[in-house]
Image (cartoon, rainbow, N blue to C red):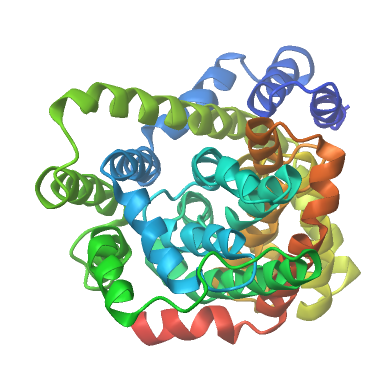
Length: 428
């Protein structure tokens, strides 16, 4: 009987109920039907508990900072800088797409926000230049995986909160995996572009003066990640306070540096940030209630006990967990899966000596890649809907990019030094 709400949740997923409501309804059914001795009031308490969390206050702050910077002309300057860097490469607009997503990592913090923005901005231009709509949608969705890995990322904030791990170390640990994802996707774009004849946008490399000029123009956005990391490293502010500082920093850039932000834009900015925050918080709140049901029924402990009995070899345990995460990522939205699975896996991996910072990047990268995979990949649906691409064509075009991302996932899983050497150097 204890597993009936869990099965009910998967039934809801199968009939396309939004993931937050699927978990919330399943948890409510448990409390109303199966929870002998538990008052229904606990469901409401667990539903609203995450909204009273100081660490999770960083989520709306970073979302607001990203929206402000989008309206402050930052994106256009970043795209100009990306074009100056890689516009002479084969498949130039695909390369610009990847580089732009990497540069956006320090400002939007959200893969879905980045995917929607780049699909609207770069997608139509790619189609006009001869790229297929399915290719444009696939590379946009795949490149957006980088955004929450480069600090600051919402997934890293949520994992750090749940696993009681330093968010600063997670942020710094995400730099190398983010760069590796960028390089692997650029290589995949190059191979596909050569096969299909997707030409460069520039006949020659951009002059050094142009690269320098576009870099200076984009410096406002590029500096935000360094600003956050330096503040965290030297204890100037906490991760939550870093989100608030990022908002002030973005406002200063928009009003006084680029001078494209006006007071009249602020209501639109606040509405957009509130809607984006609401989507994420609904999932977090419903996942919290569902996680309470799982904890009360000892489901995480049962699964963790089973994993430990299967093997205590770290490499094999990571392989089993990664395969499981890939499957889960194909069925459940990444933030929800992260909230449900972190309490299950963290005690297991720490018991066999795996660093929780290393594992945090593995689980976040894995589940974010799930956003590109059918049947419920949110990045897939976002870009395919904007570009009006059938899901079967999207999936075919995304295969080389998924192969590149899984290669990076394998690399950071089994070479933990790639994740840990920067946090160990920065934080000791």
